[in-house]
Image 1 (tube, helix red, strand yellow):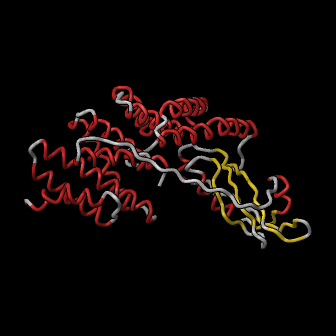
Image 2 (cartoon, rainbow, N blue to C red):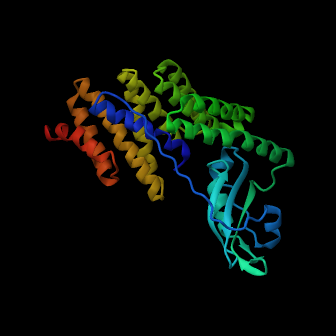
Image 3 (cartoon, helix red, strand yellow):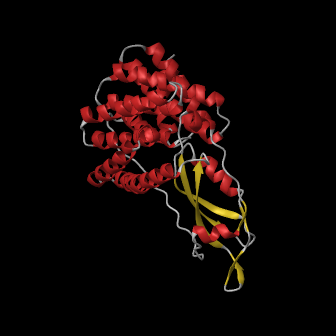
Amino acid sequence: MSRAAQFARRAMFVLLQWWVFGASFATGQTQSAQPGNLPTIPPDVARQNLVTFVQPEYPPLAKAAGIQGIVRASFEVDETGSVTDLKLISGHPMLAPAALEAIRKWKYKPFLINGKTSAVRTEAQLSIPEDITQSEIDSERKFQDAYWPNERAGRAALEKGDLTTAEAKLSLARAAAENRGDAKWLELAEVITMLGDIEERQNEYTTAEGLLKQSLAIHQRHQRPDEAEVAAAEFNLAALYVQMQRPSVAEPLLIEAARVWELRIADTPMPEAKASYGRHLALSYVGAARIAAESNRPAEARSRCEKALSFTEKWPDQNTPVIRSACGSLVESR
């Protein structure tokens, strides 16, 4: 699942709270991992021990979208020379998986520390495609140095509820993405979505609407209308319209997002992606069912609740009990 789709997580909770309590709340979590206390080898030095190098394939979707760039990662090299504990430092979400998969296949001559074979930690960066020009590499490095530290700091501040810091950091990340133009459209859309979230949390709904519309427009300009990221952007905007008490505008967005996620479930082989799409589907149908019920369309409300229940039972999570409670009476009254 892409990072763009993950931004719909808070919108899920908005819809559930609307159904049960008529209110919304923010939620978020951060994950961090610290490398072990191993000797650190500079990348240029570590490269001298690299005996098997694999260049990542250019992902077809990234190639079709004209996305290229540098992926940086840190990892351990164990006593046998194998790569372990691989962690992404920075890189485009459509490029990073291919780069990490290639690095996992690298093999090193074991490193000697004080005359003894030792595991070490190092870093590497890969260009995708391989033939990026030096000027493009320089531009990419400048972008990564400006975008990712601010994006991470802004995201962390947002999840802690520090909206002032979040807005300042994310605005800097936005400027870095805008400076690269269409080459960084996905990063730009993601950071605009988070800026919209900040405005929504401050009840600045009109400003939030403008930002979320911008994010959706960027996705629609660069992707097919049936891509999961487009559905996530529609879902986020629909949740905002629920907050703004504009259900007639939210409903078609929820239905369209559900249509796309059902398509993506059918064609993705990845269990984690299927589960994510299924959980988003359950929430889309819950929101659409509530709108139908309040619009005196009980048959539509029941049909949508049946779909919500089927998806949440197949891919249960912490929202499942609330969905059962919200939809149970509607389905039983049929």
